[in-house]
Length: 98
Image (cartoon, rainbow, N blue to C red; front, side):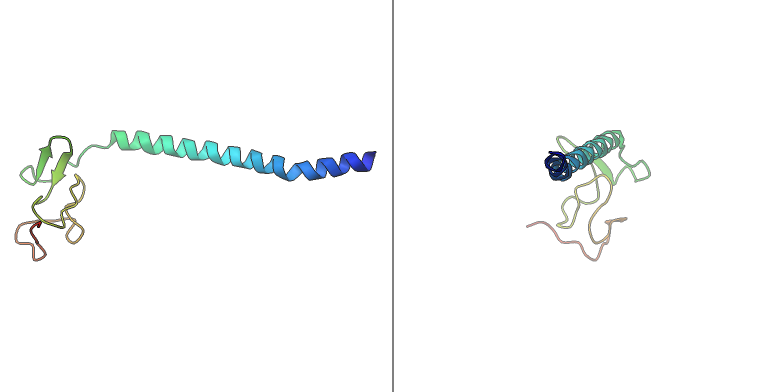
């Protein structure tokens, strides 16, 4: 009888530990996701950019750089993939959108 109970306990231990570890991992993941959401809501567009280079587009938000360029990131934080810090004037990599 004691051997049967021991086999049951040993057989049920791995699934119970697995469920417990999965639950803890899910709680940590949800906490991280919540922290990232809160952090992204607090972000403010950079103020160190020139006001002529930064503009507001309805429905999109603040953008910097030349929006007519194919490589423009359409972001308030970087201008493009090739020349992220700018400036866009006289950029050798400028390509108009097609």
